[in-house]
Image (cartoon, rainbow, N blue to C red; front, side, top):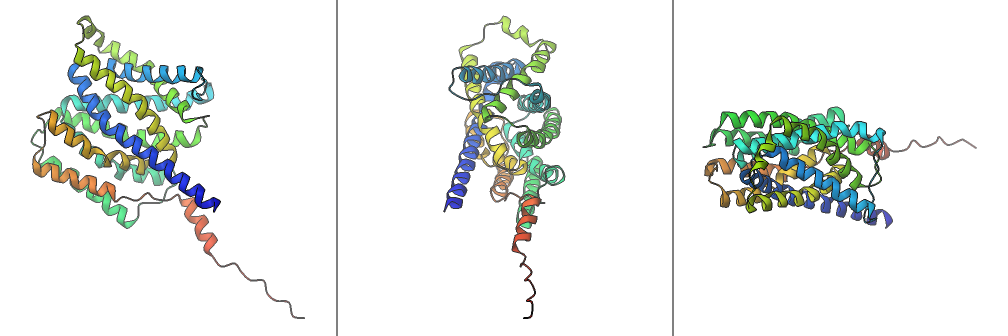
Length: 322
């Protein structure tokens, strides 16, 4: 009975983490697009998102509302690479959205579980995907290829940024899962605090290098304030749910979960901007999302070995003749 209760509680925790991350991920993509549309300084937008997240978490911890880890060198070292990967992913994400339509970004993201699943097996001790899951990953790839063929807004510069983001994103998915499993934190908020705070340092240097502070000479519009403010609020929520989900599921499944919510983004995008794919291209995109939905997480090899060992019949002791 206790085992069943624990299993139900664990499943509920996974569902809450995944649903929270899915909702924030869908809205964050739109919020970032709005932010860079009304305020063309992606570096400054990211500094505000990450810096305010770290500040809010630290203040809440000092007020006793949540538990937040203090800065320790033993944790700063591994999380420095987390910050670099995290920052590079977000920055190339926003640069991609500047030059390519949202559907283009989404469909390339839909194909990332293929590479991540191999890295999951190679580095993180997972089994390779089952036949059904392999077919789903193949469907993701075919959908991505079909989308590119029918993309009416093909932009070479945009696709270059997509490829840069693709490489960084796959590394990010695998290493952040490794960090979530191996670096012990007192709470999930500690992961949020470390990753956001450490990412602010190199980001400030990037913003100065790009001379984005020149944009601040002109007073931002009200629309810019609202768009950036919305992205900052969503940034806090998304960072929390993202780290929570990473701790509970595999890197590949986390990637698939992030993809399966994108239909909401497409609907909103079709209502706001005119940079859309053709209807045939959107069918290919829906194929990607359908395959992502039916993907099943691969178990850990150690768990499979333990289960097989437990199922083996125990050898009976020979009876000693009387």
